[in-house]
Length: 158
Image (cartoon, helix red, strand yellow):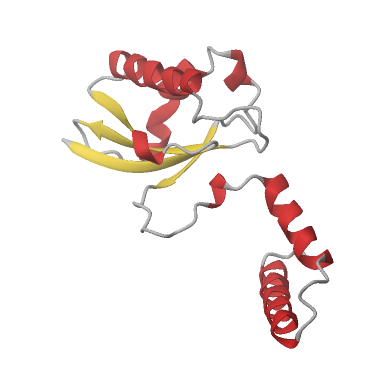
């Protein structure tokens, strides 16, 4: 038996779906069961403690070696697309983006657990906060801004 640990994240951004909600967890489990019935010798186990609002980990098991395990998830996606909530999350004919699943190390922050709104709100509050007017506060703010500038430049945002 071949096993593939994959990390699936919703392809479309937005917060219409929160996969941590029980109704969506049930949909994921039901889709995994349908996948096992439809997919000749393949099964999907959802890694329960990996479920985030927009992503989750799975273990795909197959009797044969798969060159591209992510492409073997069509029946799983099709089962989820029977629900209108998931239909609205498709972008460029994709429901999920896949990548190898790596167990998060303790203390590592999962970016998917931070909403875009909370991130932008935090940055704005940080930039507009005038309470850190001492030299230590100014140095910290300058260091953080420099890191943000470097990432922005590396990602082609500026």
